[in-house]
Amino acid sequence: MLSTAIHLAATPPQLLPARELMAFTLASHILLVPFGVALPLITLLMHHRALRRNDPVALKLARRWSAVMAVQFAIGVVTGTVLSFELGLLWPGMMGRWGDVFGLGFGIEAWAFFLEAVLIAIYLYGWRRLKPWTHFWLGVPLPLAALMGAFGIIAANAWMNTPQGFSLDAQGKPVDVDVQQAIFTPMFGPEYWHFVVAMLMTAGYVVAGVYAVGWLRGRRDRYHRLGFTVPFTVAAILTPIQFMIGDSAARAVFHKQPVKFAAMEIVWKTDTHVPEYMFGRLNSDGTISGGLKIPQLDSILAGFKPSTQVTGLTSVPAADRPTAVQATIAHWAFDIMVTVGSLLILLALWYAWSWLRNRDIPRSRWFFRCAAVAGAACLVTVECGWITTEVGRQPWIVYNQMRVSEAVTDTRAESLWAMLGIVIVVYVVVLGAFLAVILKLRTRWRIADEGIAAQRAVLPPEADTPYGPRSEPEPAAAGTAPRGGSDGTPGGAS
Figure 1 (cartoon, rainbow, N blue to C red):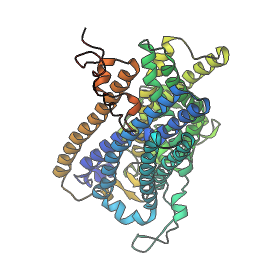
Figure 2: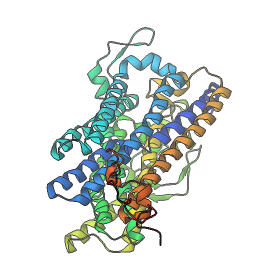
Figure 3: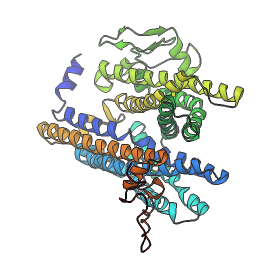
Figure 4: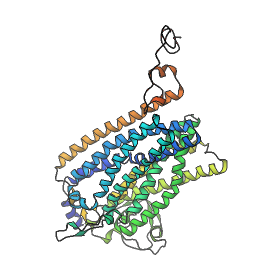
């Protein structure tokens, strides 16, 4: 308890607002990441189907998804740029000392970002200006650029979790940097594939959820069926794969970051035959309140046998491990992620059973209700994954090398709180604008699909927007009345 008190006394006052500011911006930005990483691939799958089967409905979906992809990318530019500045402004101790070791990951992400921007521009430009297959193949690098951006960010984060590729001189500064080792750290593989598959799943379930809602509202046309089936199939196929990858990633944490694993599983003392707690709360004295206790399961999951020894939080001094509150937060985030993943497997099996049995999607309204909720549930798990990774590593910003309190800026706490308030207002406006644009596009597309003549006179058809030139009205021939009624209205007054 004395060491904990000393550690808390040494905590600078600006640490809390700096962490809150970084947490808010990252939590906001990460909700857009699945669409930046995965929506290009899902769009290209639909585009390929449209060209291969000469399917105008699939082509319409691909074009509309590409418009959403462009709007999302523009919003991601804002939120991502803020995060880039915050790394240097809020955590100068980390960037100043360790930037030369792991900074290449951010460089890779920046190059991928600019490449993706160029490729999105080419893809949107090509809808009405390139031959169909030429246009498609020019879009194929888009998902690769997105994956390269994810590569850079995850490489940096994995290094923070398992730092390597350097030596320390007499002053404790990193020297003799090995870039290859700094990028391909022990946690890079598990983190990267877990992240990429999570992004694909999330985007698939969210996009499918939009059309599931339409299905529940009575829109049973082929447009909604196809818009649901393609992204949902991608997500359903990846769901059991992700469950296995996630299990492997958790086991990698067990071996490489045992104290973080102890926080994720709220294990207090090192022992064998350790029980698994579903939820529950860790108290400061090591007792656990609430939750569902499953005997020996934690040891079995960690090492495939009850005699597996699991490292506890008390294996390190109190100042070098997450607090009881932090451990509980990481534990709940991890359990929510696992619970949602398990439920999604059941949903995917329901979908697969119906397809294998009837060669058709399920007709139950409960299935579509669950599918509509699945997208939001996936976004929750994305947030939980980030919380598990970052909170479970506390108090280290670079695991076992630098504390968060050592990396934080010297800026006054009052200024950081004010900055947080400004950022919240800006993000509300930006995300509100994003939703307004998406709703505007939805309205335009619905008007185009319903063919409302009076509205079409004011709002050009979707086929000419948002990526191609708007068609100009044909001039009336000399001596003839305008099209429509004698008063010039479409169809005349009635």
